[in-house]
Structure formats: C-alpha cells, structure tokens
Image 1 (cartoon, rainbow, N blue to C red):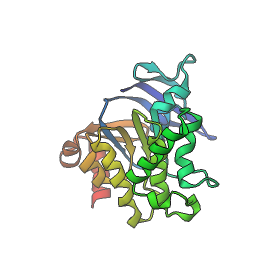
Image 2 (cartoon, helix red, strand yellow):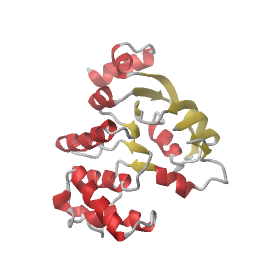
Image 3 (tube, rainbow, N blue to C red):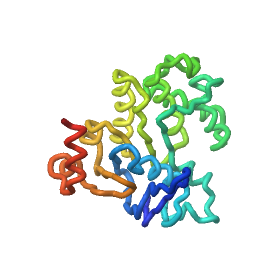
Image 4 (cartoon, helix red, strand yellow):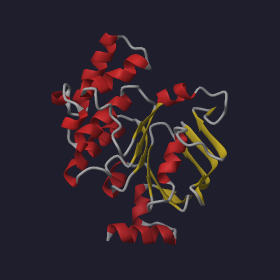
Length: 244
C-alpha cells in the first residue's frame, strides 16, 4: 500500500531542525501501524509527508506504486485515497454536521445528492452521532466533533486513513468514544497509520508499533514485542516513563 524510502526532512525555523532522518518503512494493505515517540520526534511530520502536506527534502514515498513527490503525480487523486484526521477537528463552522459530511462527496467525488445523502446518513449512524445531524460544530463536544471529522474523512472511501494524535485535544472522558470508532474501522480492515499517545489502543489494535526519536525510527515490531521485550535502550526508557 505505502512504501517509504529514505525520507529526510529539514525545517529552517529559523534554526535548522532535522525532523526526519533516513526514515524507511512499508505499510501493507489492511495493516494498523501505530507511531509513538516523545514530542518533537518527527511523528507528525512523518504522517504529513505521507499525504504530501509536507514535502521531503530527499527520498521517496510510493502509494500503490505512485511516487507522490513526482511532478507528474495528481495529488488530488492520491489524497482522495488517503484520508486524514488531525488533532484539531477542522470542520466547517458555518455548516451543520450533515453538511460537513456531505460537502466533499458532492464537490470532490461528484456524487449524486441521493448517493451522498445515503452515505452521510450511514456514516453518522456508524460514528454514533445521528442525533446531531442538524447541529453546528460549536454545539458539539470535542469527542463529537472528532467523530464528525472521521465520518467526513471516510465518506471519501479512502484506502488508507492517517490519524495525527486524534485524541490529544479531548477531555479524558471523550477519548474512548473516538477510539471506539477507530477500533471499529480497524476491525473492518481499514489500512491505518495512527500517531498517538494512547498505549492501550496500540496494544489492542496495532499490527505493528513504530517508535521514533530525533527524526529516526528507533524500533518497530508487534505490540507484544514492543511492550514486553523491546531491544533498544531508548525504547525501554520511553516506555518506563510513560507506563510507570
């Protein structure tokens, strides 16, 4: 599904910061990959490069064999395959919940209104927010807004979903309602790359865990390996700090 080859990314803000250093990995269709690490380790930059919201200075990212950094690549077509959910909900404040989920289907996918309506009703039920269809984002809790954001993303029928710390802006009691939606997506076979601090989610849902630090992939493996028998000392230190 996704092949990442020797990605480097440097920011000049104003000092030179190496956000990604020689990052390589593969993400298979149907796989759930959870990316963890300390703040500033490059996790979000890694995710944003996959959707070309950031452009790497060096290296390749192939999505279904297509080089997304090539000038010949139509990124609108690629982004239609790659849904993304951010920390902030990014909903249209002047549109209702129903309209937020409908809009991109009509304007980007050019779906008929009847098909888009059917899809929207189905997805609002799927994320448990049917009763808020006529509400505006400001009238929703953070957890409800994030579920709308997920519904809007999967309305595009993506082949892969990227989640950039989707629960970090939520109150603790709202986190589980968003994670439950993500767990359901994983069970349905959605390819997912998730940047998160929710270790319980990683243990329960991930096929593979990637640990990043200082822009590099330090260690990766199954949740069982990662949480019970990590090999790298930096990984052990990180886990000791967050699990103690």
